[in-house]
Image (tube, rainbow, N blue to C red):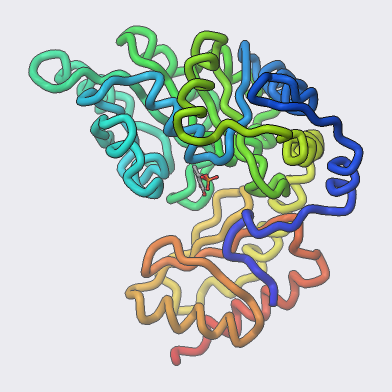
Length: 341
Ligand SMILES: Cc1ncc(COP(=O)(O)O)c(C=O)c1O
C-alpha cells in the first residue's frame, strides 16, 4: 500500500537512526541534555528568536503559547478553519479558557480591513483580544503558503493593538522553501511552533520559539502538562537530522506537482481539485458518498488517502513516497475518479 493520508506517516531513515545511535544524552529536566540544548539553540538562531523549547507535539506548542499569552475569558483571533481552533480537541477551552474569534480569510490570509474593524469593536464591549494566530502553511485550504509580507502586516497590527502574534508553523518549512528570505520569523512574531514529524521525517517532536521570558514561562507550562522529558536527546537527535535536511521537502512538492499535472481534471466526478504548490492535493466532491466511493476505489488500487472533510479527500506527499510509484498514483486517481460506484 502507498500511504498518502498524511506527511506524518514517515518512518525514520537509516541516516536518522544512525544520528540517534551517536547522540549524547543527559537529563533535560535539569537542562543537561546537550542534544536538546543544541537543537533549541540551533532552531532559535535559524529563525531569529531568542530561545527555543523542545515540546512533544504541535498541539503542545500551540496550546502553551495560548497559555502564556492570554488569560481566561480573553479572545484569540483565528481563521474559521484553523487547526488551533478546530482540530486540537477543544484544548484551548480546556486549558487556557479563552474564546476564539473568527475573522474572514482566504487561504489562511486575513482580510486586513475586517481584522482591524474586529479589533476596534473589541475595545468597546467585547472581551480583550490578546492573541492573533496565523497558520503557515494553511492546512484546511490545501497547504497554502501565507506570504511573508502578510505576516509582516499582521505583526504591525498586533504591535499597534498590544496583541501577541503566534504562528502555527507546523509545516512552516514548506512556506520558507518558496520564499527563502522569509526565515527570520522572530523579527515579526512573538511565538512560533513547528513540527519535526510532519514531512521533515522525524518520529516525534516540535519546536516552540519565542523570547527568553516567553520560553521560561513556556517551560513551566510544559512541565504542568506532563511534557517534561529526560534523556530526550534520543528524539532530539532525530529532529536535528530532520531540520538539517529540510530542503529535501522540495522533492515532495515536485511529487505533488507531477501528480497534479497528470490528473485528468475534466473528469466530472470532481467538484474541484485543489493544489497550492506544496505537498498536498485535495479532491472535492458534491457529497460525501462520492468522496467515499473515490476513497474506496483508490484503496482497491493500493493507495491510502485521507479525509480533510467528509466531502474532501486528500493525498499528501512525503519522503517515503518513492518517485517510481508516481505513475501508479496517477493511474489510480484517474481510474478511481472515472468510476461512479
Ligand atoms: C497546521 C497544524 N497545526 C498543528 C498541528 C498539531 O500537530 P501535532 O499533531 O503534532 O499535535 C497539526 C497536525 O496535523 C497541523 O496540521
